[in-house]
Length: 93
Image (cartoon, rainbow, N blue to C red; front, top):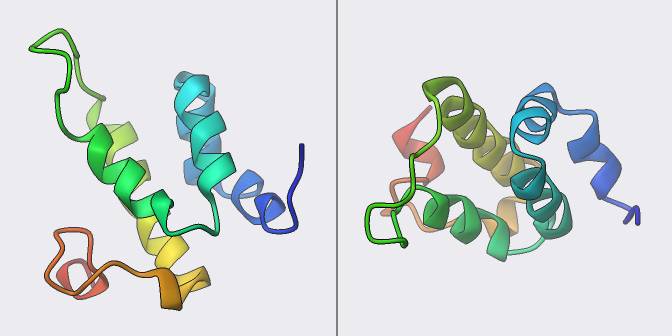
């Protein structure tokens, strides 16, 4: 299902990289694109919620996820997380 804003993420090279290697994550990213939950979802991906059973992402994927958060904040500035957040724009620009 394509939403009006989902085509923007589908064309993003970082999304394509994540989606290629982790399709289940890509599907969720696409669903949340344009919504406040996007940044929170990516932030949650960085935490092990499986008592050590989560292997983590390769550095290339982690960097792509970070760049997706920044792209989301650029596309939807009203949804950007607070500046005090580790994902906040001022921390990476």
